[in-house]
Length: 203
Image 1 (cartoon, rainbow, N blue to C red):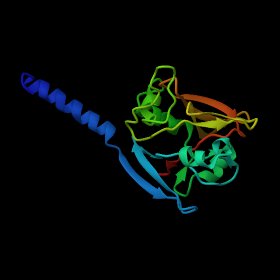
Image 2 (image 1 turned 120 degrees about the vertical axis):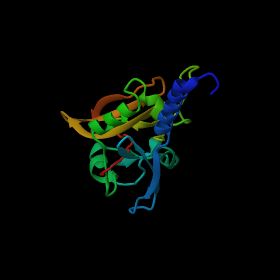
Image 3 (image 1 turned 180 degrees about the horizontal axis):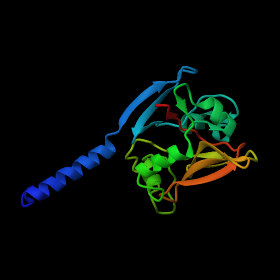
Image 4 (image 1 turned 30 degrees about the vertical axis):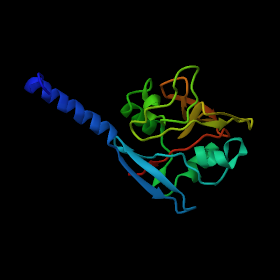
């Protein structure tokens, strides 16, 4: 602190407090009574999220490449109707576009939120660039890939895709994070596509 003076020490203390408020999120766990699986949770801003992709075997859902080990690593891929009605347990729900928007805003906006929400490992590098995230909020987004409406799997290690609860002209919206970009995008796909699911708490 030498040479900072009272004003400098005050500014530095405020900055340290701000960093602490960003990284010291409220973390917890819950057990899904349907199959006994335990999930990490994290409160980011005013919302509490599952900090892992859902992996309950229900409805129309798949493991990436039909390989059970990928379900353990990334969670399951779900068709939209299943994601809306069957995946999130009691007390939780599939998040809306607005709830995802609140998360992205808390993480600095759509151009940089992806880097902050990505897990610290598991993302394939883009050429020489380290594509892993900083995971400062404990959201730990993983690149689980997708199953397209033709039944083909692709993208594991390179992109993560999460359904929202909202639809548009026969399609439904999802958020995407890519290994070669620091942002978060909002796009739509046929409801038969298979994407991963995060749940947000009702209260």
